[in-house]
Length: 467
Image (cartoon, rainbow, N blue to C red; front, top):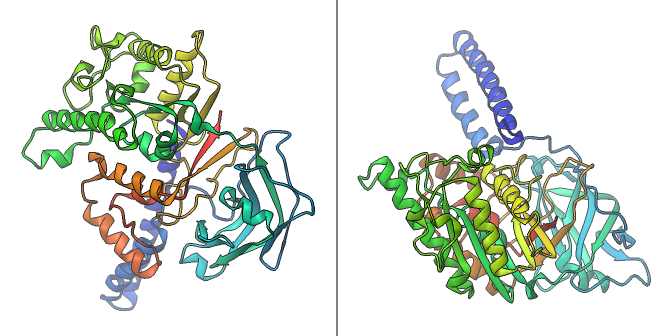
């Protein structure tokens, strides 16, 4: 069981214990006070839970984040005075550097019910970065877009429903212009490349999008059309295969640089455990990947037999890397993103690179899911992204922030809107929860779409990690 599953299991166990205790208290109140009182309290308790306690947060908001950045990273001296952040005299920041500021953030009492926000003011377009309700610990702001304002001494930090305090520490990571490189984005599923790296690959001189799985499972939306389970899964897989080939064209990526490998969703770990043994689809009644490869612009080694094996996956990746010769490969980060297909995608790329005659100059990791906080990046569409929760100081982390223009942000939102998997309406319970949170917790809906990924991914910048 991976760490994410362990955290979920513990969370559900604690939730069941809490519900049992609440039920006992309500029964006692119903017997001793009035029969109707437990009903009223249960309704109010449920509303309070949906408004303020429904987030999956598997750590205390009072915990300090524990980052360890690479040695010899520049640390320009800064001071915070009356909300204004100033560099020491004579300090010059590199243009395009990724800037990270560590500060202690403490929520006010209202910040236990409304998301605390730190506003970065002084630029033409103020930036907001959001943190956990009830936060009281060390956090890391992303100041990468504020370098010019900071250099002029005009950057102001203002807390809403929180206060910033302590001696600030600033790190400056040397700029890396990945936009003028041959770039290959590894997407475990259709939409992963767009969620994590649309801004990057849309600006690259040459981009390749390689999607590993068809993402065919969990096709209940298509079963409502009257299709059986297997037929619905096949239809969903074909649609997502189409998305993986066609949507990157919106960013100018040529069709011959978009490849769908057609392996089956949530089967990569089983493939890795038995590299020569085929692992069929869980729901589509298929053991041949070629149904989902029909739109590919050229043949690959796995097309010979269509067997969904780890060995075929490695052969496909080696062929693609040698054909594309990418200078930058963008892939899931193994320490941040716990999705099993994402972990396997990372391991598959590294294994494919072993002994290969072509080696990229840079590997960049991304996280579309987190172990500890299902809501990260916190905050609204269009806002900034602070560094995610991280509690492993033994692992050095090297962030790279890439800004998006407003036009690029809108294009990214439209690319996500084309993805069939992000189009079905949310379940009624989730829509009801969002309505309660909108009324009581001040949270806003994304203007781009109903799926949660429109809020998470359509931001002022994209955050990567050098591997």
